[in-house]
Image (cartoon, rainbow, N blue to C red; front, side, top):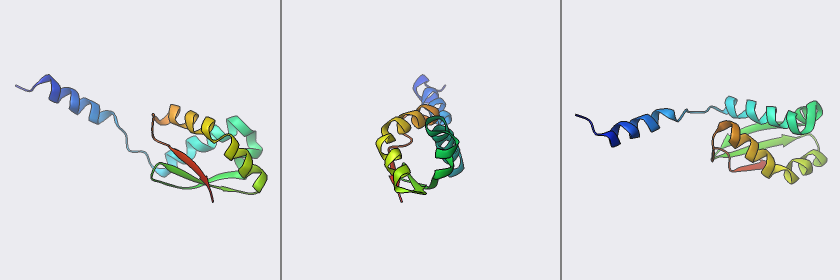
Length: 93
């Protein structure tokens, strides 16, 4: 007979879903579009994802500055979509 602790542990493990870069980039672009509109979505592109950090490429320093000043809000919204702690930082390339 299996213990309740083991069954609950297995159930919790199954809940975690492996996210791909494409999933994260899709959510990032969705949040950017909500915050900055279509122009912002065109100017700010997620380049790659590594160690819970999204590296973003910007077309200008003005958009990079705008993203930098709003990064905490964007991280919070992305984590709301993906799950807490999935994204810790956004860096500009």
